Length: 421
Ligand code: LLP
Image 1 (cartoon, rainbow, N blue to C red):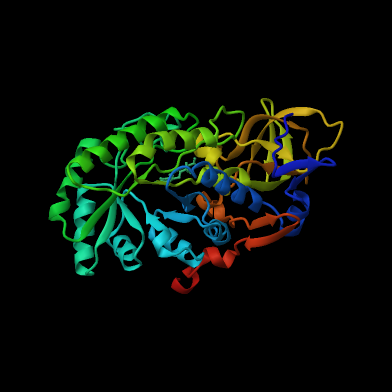
Image 2 (cartoon, rainbow, N blue to C red):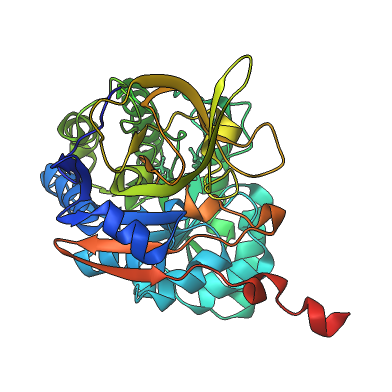
C-alpha cells in the first residue's frame, strides 16, 4: 500500500505522528472517530501565501466555512488574517474567535435581511452582493440604520474551473454572482444608491481547482471591468479573487502557490488596487485527519469491507462528491498482506463509505485508521444522522495537543425536545 507522508504527518518507528505526537496516543485518549489538526500546517500555509504575495498590496481572509472551529479561526486571526463568513452563524463564530469586524467580509448568494443588518451593525469591512435585488435591499437597510454600506459585486466570469460540478461556481449556469454586463450596469447605479459605496469586485470560481489558468483568465476579466469603471469615474479599491486553490488528496498535479501568486501579481500590479483572497481548503485540508477504529472486517462474495466507527455523518465528502481521501493505518505492522477493500461506516446507507476499493495493509478488529486530508469541509459538514454524536476535535502543536471541541453528548443532540414532548 501507499503511505501518505508530509512535514505534518509522518511515520516514525511505524507509528503515524501528527507533528511530534503519535496519533495513536490521541485516538486512545479521546476515542474515535476524532478529528485531529496540525497547527503548524495552518501557520505555514498562511505564511506561504502571504509571503508569495508580498509584491502586491493584498489581504487574506480565511474562508471559515472550510473549518469553523473557534480555535482554528483564532489561529488565523492571530496570524493577522481576516475572515470570510458566509452566514450569520459564521459571523457569530468569527467574532467569538476574536476577529475584528473591520477584518471580516460577508459572502452568500442568499443573505437574509437580518444577515445584512448584522453585517452593517457590526461594521464589517464589506458585503459581497450577488444580485440587483440584494443591492437594493442593502441600500434600504443601510438607510434605515443611517450607515453607508461598503459593497463589492460578485461577478460570475463564466470561466470553467474544471472541477467537480457541485463545487464549480464561476460558470454562467451556476447560481452565483452576476454576469459582467449586469455587474457594469449595477456599478453604474452608484449615483442613485445613497447608502452604498461600491468598494470592489469579487469572484469565486469554484473549489479544488488544480490549474492556474482559470484564475488568470477570470482575473483578467475582473481587471477589464475595474479599468472600464475607472474610465467612467467609478473608482473601486479592491479586487477579490475568492478561494478555490486545489490541494493534494491523492497525486493530483497542482500548481505552486508561488505560481498562483505571481500570476495575480502580473495581472493586478498595474491596476493600483488591493487584492483580496479567501482561501479555505488550502489552509485546512491537509492539516487534518479523521482517526477511526476498525469495528469489524468482513469478506463477502464480491468484496472486503472494513467497517469502522467513523461514517458519512462524520466525513461526507466521499459520499457526496465521490471524493478520494487516502486511508492508512495509525500503526504499520510488518508482514500484513495488502488487501483491496471498501472502508465503510455503521450508517444504514450503501452510500456510507470513507474510501472505496482502496489498497490497505490487512486490518483487523480494533486497529486504527487515519482518513487523510480531512481538515477542510470535514467537521463543518458533519451531521447527527443515525443519532450519531459529532466527533471531538484536537489541535496538535509541536509535542503538545489539546481538545478544541469535545465529542457531543446525546443531551446536546436531543436539545430541548424532551421539554417539548
Ligand atoms: N469564498 C467563497 C465565496 C466560497 O464560496 C468558498 C467556498 C471559498 C471562498 C473557499 O473556497 P476553497 O478555498 O475552500 O476552495 N464542500 C465542498 C467545497 C465547497 C466550497 C464552497 N465555497 C467540498 O468539500 O469540496
